[in-house]
Amino acid sequence: MAILVTGGLGYIGSHTVVELINNGFEVIIVDDLSNSEKFILYNIEEITGKRPIFYPFDLRRKELLTQVFDAHQIEGCINFAASKAVGESQLKPVDYYENNLFSLINILQEFKERGISNFIFSSSCTVYGQAETMPIDENTPLKMPESVYGKTKQMGEEILIDFAKAYHRKISLLRYFNPIGAHSSALIGELPIGVPNNLVPYVMQTAAGIREKLSIWGDDYPTEDGTAVRDYIYVVDLAKAHVKALQKLINDNSDEALIDIFNLGTGNGSSVLEVVKAFEIANKVEVPYQICERREGDITVAYANVDKAEKELNWKSETSLEEALRTVWQWQKYLESKNS
Ligand code: NAD
Ligand code: WQD
Image 1 (cartoon, rainbow, N blue to C red):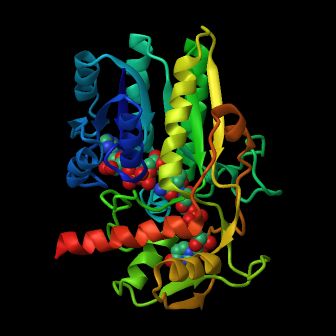
Image 2: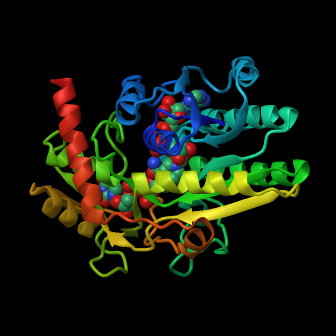
């Protein structure tokens, strides 16, 4: 059974491709390498012993996408491809709407015309904004996100729900909390392109001496140590949830629409300072930091209630924060050896 994985050479996509191959799926990747590199394909092969079929093009090129669907018996799609930098999305809203939504619609046109079901969408906890109560379950009311990036995720969800209802198809909206870490082989991980915006890549580069100091954005939040709290989920655990979500869609034999929505996190919140300390302990390195003003648009606290995924997907995260942070450091060492 061939599964189209868009953005399959990216961070979460590459880890998911490994899990799909390990579970016997045939994988077809479309990725334009706008935020990834070709060596990831060879490293996926090194990990799994199998090189996925790879098409390097932009999903906005509908005619090329049609050729891929003509050439393969595609039975489902996991759609990771998107632009994801929150700050950049504010400066380039049209580009973000175009990339994230046109790509999605082009795939859905193929699905619609060819009668294909089984679509998994990378959504985000950003659709909840600052929720009133913790932990956040799937019934927590959504808030219109502040960023254009977040809006593309909420709009993507709406488009897919309409698609599933109108054409009786099966979709899964996976709302990731904060993915971190790298594969235990250290052959794939989050590629730091430019100055990282996210916490863990910045911590990694600070420990490595690439950045002088980590700026901790605010220590006056109403949390235990004053720094903001998030739910950091290990990327391989997250990847495994995709396989379970896909199997659930495939195994559903009804002709009705199926709209699955799952929060994917650990269920635990960690503060920025806790992450820094855990990184230092896990890797026996120092992470110099300074406390700065709050970052605009940041929320105070977000962590998931993952009961639904546990019950319906038989999935839960298995990896501790420290273990996950250890893989981050191994990945940094790999990148250093590769570039030397
Ligand atoms: P990533 O940038 O590492 O991966 C995305 C991949 O898609 C890249 O390889 C990029 O080259 C490719 N791509 C982008 N636009 C494309 C296009 N038009 N055509 C073909 N390929 C294209 O990002 P990631 O962290 O792996 O995120 C994957 C998905 O998960 C994204 O949709 C993202 O919004 C979502 N998500 C990420 C996080 C996170 O913190 N990393 C959290 C929640 C949701
Ligand atoms: C985590 C915490 C920062 C960097 C973003 C997106 C969200 C989702 C996940 C995709 C915050 C603090 C960070 C730094 C810091 N992505 N921090 N110094 O903000 O939870 O969410 O990624 O869907 O949409 O907005 O993640 O890693 O940027 O920040 O103190 O240099 O670390 O203030 O409290 P965030 P993050």
